[in-house]
Length: 244
Ligand code: APR
Picture 1 (cartoon, protein in one colour):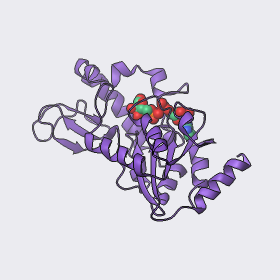
Picture 2 (cartoon, protein in one colour):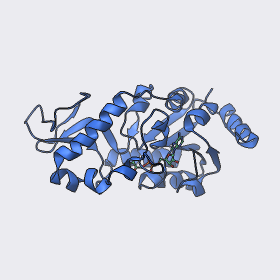
Picture 3 (cartoon, helix red, strand yellow):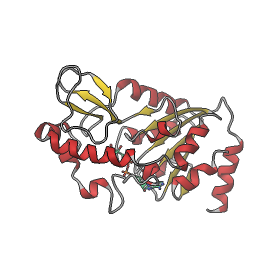
Picture 4 (cartoon, protein in one colour):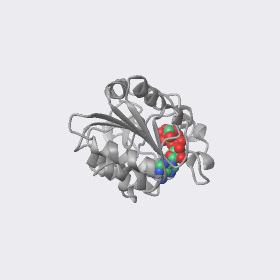
């Protein structure tokens, strides 16, 4: 790693203190080292091999719920077999040293398995199912799932508790994330292409509110112009440098 970047990270590490408000936005790149494919950017990325409009929209689910469920069931099995990596663990440790708000676009639950609490799941969770008839949600970790999974309460068709393209972010999560970006002194962006809003807009909110913005990514992304320090490399190798 470039010596200037390493020195800057060690300097920020030395300034960490319990009342320092820090906000973090993570994307699929943080789970790549755990063997979970990202959505964009490499040959095995999900959207290189599957069409989001066929699998990640309410229309696609209405058209063919079993096709959509078979895809989510495949992803659930892959995630269940994965382990949090050093980047997830570093963020769980960081929460013990600063006043941390962890915002993730990931639906995999690996932050929570690494020990992070109060995670703002911006795009929902692949482990939460919602009834399309009675609206009831239930946590469900069965792998494999019976397809299609049905509601325990009313027998209605369950859908994945994730935010699909064309759907809105939970208002409570949106306002919590925006407040954390506005109030933080340090904002970390980890493993996101910045392709999807409103999540990708949080870095600019933080910067415009005077926070120092750091990005951890293999390559420059759509949010890189908002950051003060770009840290190249795999987050599993670079992020632990920031947290004792
Ligand atoms: N360490 C750090 N960054 C990485 C690593 C790694 N080991 N591997 C990949 N990356 C970076 C890539 O360079 C890319 O910038 O992670 C990013 C992954 O980008 P996407 O696949 O677009 O994932 P994300 O930004 O989370 O997607 C946003 O899009 O499809 C929707 O709802 C889905 O939440 C998702 C949203």
